[in-house]
Length: 119
Image (cartoon, one colour):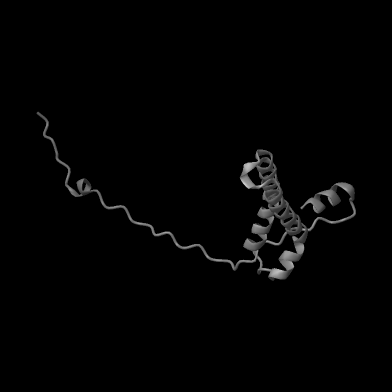
């Protein structure tokens, strides 16, 4: 997405390519090939978090905990990209029909109305 934004801002000669929706799913390889940079950055951030855990001694060092939290927060967009890539290759499913129930008739409406006599 970043490449698309930068190329759109920097050049005017490249066309905008829409993302195909509601079409047949792409193979796993092609979806992962498109998001390889995000997967690489996610892997690097997770490796950095593990290295921080090892070097700082886990939960005992508060500075290490803050750094690990920062690395987790930075990795969230990349994890979301990977999750959306995985969701996009899942087969489409039709929504289940929601059962609808007819309302029960009001028993008072079946009773004949009472006529009042004028006094």
